[in-house]
Amino acid sequence: MNASYDVAVVGAGPAGLAAATVAARHALTTILFDEQAAPGGQMHRGLTASPPGRRAMLGNDYTRGDALIDACRQSGTTCVYDAAVWATRKGDDGSYDVGVAHGGSGARSVRFVKARALIIATGALERPFPIPGWTLPGVMTAGAAQVLLKSSGIVGEGRVVLAGSGPLLWLLASQYLDAGVTPAAMLDTTPRGRRWRVLPEAWGFLRSPYFGTGVALLRRVRRHVRQFANVTALAASGPARLESLQFDAGGTTHALPADLLLLHQGVVPDINLGSALGCAYEWNAAQACFQPIVDVWGGSTLPGVFFAGDGAGIAGAEAAEARGQLAALAVANALGRIDASARDGAAEKPRAALRRALRGRRLLDALYRPADAYRIPRGDTIVCRCEEVTARQIAGAVKDGACGPNQVKAFLRCGMGPCQGRMCGLTVTELVAQARNVSPSEAGYFRLRWPVRPITLGELASVGGSPEAERAVVRGPVR
Amino acid sequence: MFRRLPEPGTAPVPVVPVTVDGHPFLALAGDSVAAVLLMSGRLACRSAPVSGAPRGPFCLIGACFDCLVTIDGQPNRQACLVPVAPAMRIETGKGAR
Image (cartoon, rainbow over the protein chains, first blue to last red):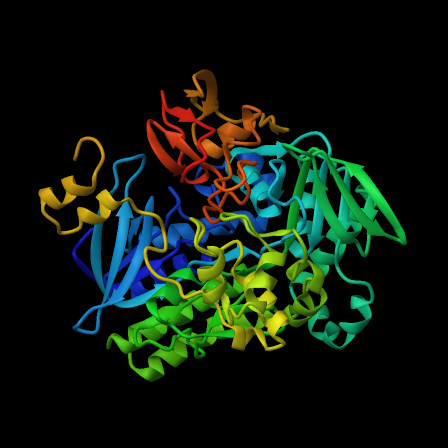
């Protein structure tokens, strides 16, 4: 790792790998960071160590990451894994300082690396799914189940129930069937009547790459897994761990014993790094989330800072790859490696790929927009998992004068825990918006600050500090 | 609660001996500490700081911080982000952050 680079890319998923590859091929010195021990992001998680049987089971969407990873390796990019980017700040000379904590168990080195341009490809998080009992052990996200399957070949056992809406939930059900696991039930929370309302968007979807595989996948899962449609009032219970589920469907209240509940209602951009840096964000009403304001190249409201992949707005893995390439081309132009016409020429292919990948997106957005009740909970449902703050408390704080998420945080510590609002931020925004009868955009979001990933005080003191400064805050022996 | 799929035709993955709350457990190389917790039958790994309610791994992508455990004496490590290493000491059950 050198002290400075032309480009720093944060995140080694499809967007970050593609961006780094294109940047390095344009003779830009490029460094790529990822918090995981290996490249691939969540999409191609564990791919570099995946045994043949698992690769075959997970299919082409998974293994197409091989080409991305190989290309990046051969591009001359400096790839640094086990590297948590905990801060980014603008330096006096217009370049950016990237704070990195690098290394495995307990012995990380913390430093700043300079970069003239920054490509943020930190991807998506699963949208919060605040229902009663979602903090119980035995309740996890569908994405978590995919991580276990991809990186360790581990599957749920016993009565596994999938609940929520969105393509990833169906994909997981299908992957579990491939792995020989038949989920006990699938609870579809997509609101009633949604299928008719999305008809105007259907033309785009019929021409999309998702159409053929999507329909076949849905049919297969429906045939093998017990289905409940239009599920409302979903709740998990059990005193110390998940024991059963309650929900309404088909005009009746159901109770279902369960050992493992896997929740999912779509993904949303991970905004912590870009927002802490000072990039402007906007509310996406169709997807009910915040996303960075970007131009057609992914350029943010800060000079030299670009977004690519789902962190720039949810669009999926194929779009991520194209947007990574586009961002890198714009950086190559901004740093004088290519002129505008060369940039535009090279952009034609990724632009076409992006258009193809985005076909049908509007139908998916409209069809799987989570129901209000699952985004904006009521009563004693926990919203902030870290500080255990309920929807009722947040509504009360707004009544007492809290006008936005930051005031709610000051009143209740909501969003102040270790997850830094990742599990509650959007819920708090929408709760405040509803209580004040304003738009989510006006309600706003938590003011995010670095460190956006946890570092110890000792690690912080070690950045350019004296041994005395480090000793003053470190428990135990100083390295 | 969880099981490992048989993966026939695959070269054997090295076994990694660790301890969880003092009990020996055999993990496989490449597993995260969170995977070890789940495979050893521990859905819960700490207590929530306000109510004391049990919590366990939730998101496995480093976002939720519900899988905080003590690893080799260092508290508040995210179990889902740490790969197992031989002789690793994993301790659950601490409520503080």
